[in-house]
Structures are given as structure tokens and as C-alpha cells.
Length: 446
Image 1 (spheres, rainbow, N blue to C red):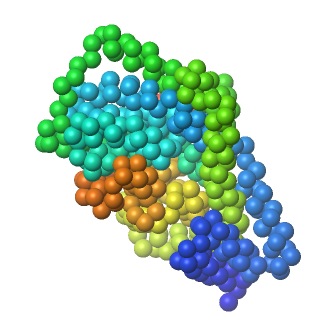
Image 2: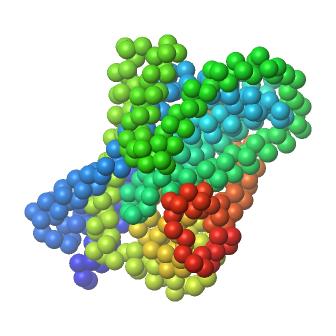
Image 3: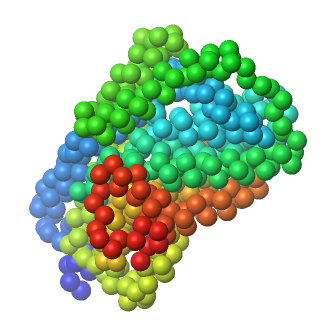
């Protein structure tokens, strides 16, 4: 057995075994990758090479955006910004049946557009709107399902930390292009949830009787526009070339902090706790990126991506079938693995395969992110599912039945995004952020 094959077997075996034993996923990847490295070179060289790869994984200017966006999200969650976004969302949603559930969905999309975190969105909006829905007689599983199902829109509508990770792994992929590509798929997901929540709400008699007069509308807009203005400043600045995504994330922190002080919802004594929570989350993400850099080195040496590509292309040459297989694999992986490590592991494997039949890296990135977002709604890992249930104070088995129709809606949206490149490529193409080669089919892949 040659060194490459031995390294691949040892690495994969150790990762799987340690995950089964309940090790944190970052530690599992690190142990497996380090052991695989020692199969390639002697121990002293393996230690030095692993350390170099670990440092290289973190040594990226783009990755600096992640801690800033995490911090901005935590500030917004504690600074009264979430409440004002709820007011704007209700202004839009009060026309539809199940008004408060609709408000929750729209608010998740808005909060995601300024924080980049699905868990933060579901936690913030669930804690604000959940008691209101209970007070007017909404079924708790119905309310919780709407909140949970729409939470992942925060990971797709920019800014998005998972897209930054993908751009780093995929290399030469523009973060600005990925951000712009996320709008239509993210809104498609959210609108699908709104339609279903409206149908359910109408059947149960959750009809809104309140009306917004001009004075009330202007008041809501006056309170909410400063929060929404962050989207214009950050995304507009990135697109206009005024600053990079990393610099934009720092501006988001400063802006959200100023707003929170103006709203008087955050005091100086609250900042250490907010900073500490942000550091903890950042450390988890950054450690995963670093150990995945070691794993990527071993995978490249063992030619694992090439072996999987050969096996998959040997099975079928149809792009349609290949993408179906990839979707199934990513959906299953998402059930057992957080999006960040899944992106780090599977991007180097699947992206080269998709590029063989001309799929654009931005289109593939959106397909991958959308697949892995579904995993945040499913046991046993589903972070948004657990956060939403905890906020609503209900058991998972109570909400699963209500969630099942949402999975159907999301599956339809996923298929549309997978096979119609136009949905993810239209905006970045119109803005000149991507180059579409002649003959590229924007309405049906392959």
C-alpha cells in the first residue's frame, strides 16, 4: 500500500471514529488530518508541515470579515435593532393571513440581511414574536415552524459568513459576486415559506384585523430605516468598490454599535459579554478553517478529489444526474455536520467535477450553501431547529409535523436554484461581477 492510500484511509477512519465517539468536529478533523500527514512524511516534518498549513488556513484577509460580522450580529441582537426590524417586517406582512408568522419570516430575512446568521435571526425574532403570537392564540408549533423554516434565509441573503468561507476555499471566487448571487435564492426560500404560512394561517383563521394608517406607517419607517440602512451602506460600499467585504464588516460593527447606543439598549458594561460571545463563536469557525487546511493538503496528496470525481463521472456523464447525486449527498451531510466544515470538506471534491461540465463556481456555491442550510433544520445537528424550539419552549417532536410541508417548499426552491443558473447568476452578471462565457445556459444547467 502506498503512502497516499494509507494517508487517505487513516485520515477518513480517524475522523469517522472520533465523530462517532462524540469528539467536537474540529478536533476530529484535526486528529485525522494530522495522522494522515504522518503517513506521508516523518513525524518531525509532519508536525512542521501541519503547523504551516494551520497558519496558512487562518492567514486570509477575507476571513477577517467573519469575526466582524459575528460581532455585528451580536450587537444588533442586543441593541434593539431586531425590534425595529420587526416593525418594518410587520408593515409588509400585515396584508397576509397569519400576519405575525408572516412578520417572523420577513423579519428573519431582514435580520439575516444585516447579521449573516440564521441562528441569531431565529433566536432574536422568535423571542420577540413568539410571545405576541401566543397572546393572540396562534398554535405554538405553527409559530415555531414558521420561525425555524425561515431562519436559514439569514445565511443566504448577504452578508453571509458561510459564503465567505466558501469563497476562501474555492479561491478566485468573488465574495461580492457570491453576496449578490444569494439574494434571489434567499428571497425565493423566504417567499415560499410565506406562501405556506399564509395557507396554513388562513385555514386556521389567523386573519389580521389591524390596519396601518399613514401616521403609524411613517413612525415604523422612521424607526426602522436606520437599521435597514446598514444593508445599503455595507453592500453598496462593497459593490461600489469603496471598501472590501472585510472593511465592510468592520463598518457594520461600528454602525450597529452607534445605533445601539443611540437606542440606549446597550451600555458600556454590556460590551465585554458581547465581545466574549463573539470571540467564542469566531474561535470555533476559525479553528475549523485551520484544521481543514491540513486536511485539504492530505486530500490533495492522496488525490481523493480526483478519485471521487472519476468514480462519479464513471457512473454517469449527465450533469442533471450528477447534480442530483451531489444534492442528495450534501443534504445527508448537512444533517450530521455544520455548514462550515461541510463547505471546507466538500468544496474541493465537488467543485472540480461541476466545472468539468461548465457550472460556474458562484452557481455551485449557492447550490451547496442552500443544501447545507437545510441541514440546520434537521436533527441531530440542526442548530436553527434546536434554537427555535428552545426559544419557543416546545419539544422537537411537536414542531416536526408542522415543518414537513416547509421541507417540500424548500426542496422545490433548491431544485430551481440547482437547475436554473439564472436565479443565482442574474444579479452578479448584471452588475459585471462574473463573466458568463458564450454558450452558458442561464435557464437550464447542462
